[in-house]
Amino acid sequence: MNSETVRYEVIHRPRVTRRIHLEIDPRGGLRVVAPKRMSRRTIHRALQARAVYVARFLEQARSRQQDLKVLTWSSGEEHFFMGVKLRLAVDEQPGQRSSVRVDDGQLHVEVPDLAPGRVSRLLARWYRQQAQQQFSGRLEHYSSLACWTGDKTPPMRLRRMKRTWGSCSSRGVITLNPHLVKAPAECMDYVIAHEICHLKEHNHGRAFYVLQEQLYPAWREAKALLRNQGHLYLHC
Ligand SMILES: [Zn+2]
Image 1 (tube, helix red, strand yellow):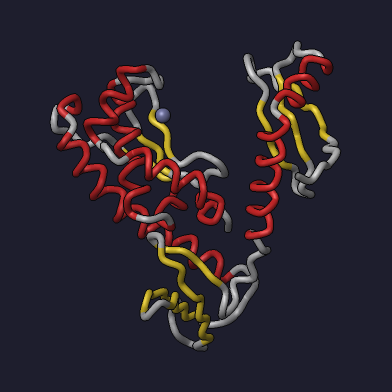
Image 2 (tube, rainbow, N blue to C red):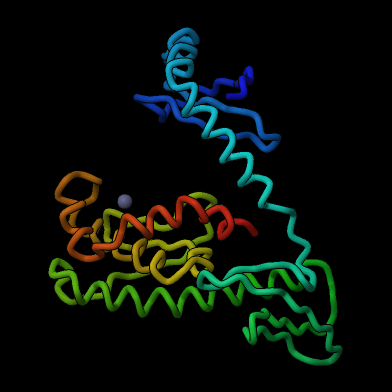
């Protein structure tokens, strides 16, 4: 087994109340987020006791970081749509209107010119339209299966988020991350069913899991898939 001395930086966040959790900084260093009053010594001991876990976390987080190259939005680059990896093909067609289409494993983009940001903006808009379409159908479907919605489809909003796939407000509005449309269908199903369960149960207590199990029994697999692949879909 390799031994490595791991340096880390401690960050105290007021909202972290009970446990420490690990993050990786942009340079691949370990960041330990700890409750406000936890002492350095307690933190250090906790890390030592979980040395194997810490090492595994770092290895996985660093390899994920390497997956994420800076996007150039040019031909040949890989982009995801509904779990499928597509190759971007950018065509400059002066005088034509912009368009996007998926065809034969490619994401074809036509633009009148290659002004900076043109392709990325066009694709962001396209993903958003696709998300609207995909999510609203699913939201309707799973709401109709859930007996607590009274057969009503809850209102939906789209918002690009860095870490969150979805949320449900206390007023029953479901917010979904349009990046989720890059993930496989089962991940969309899982997140949407999960948020519909929050219409009835606002926290993750036992009652919540009973509902989730009913509404989307394969939630564990989808959740694991998102945990492993999610960084690829959030990247843009
Ligand atoms: Zn939840």
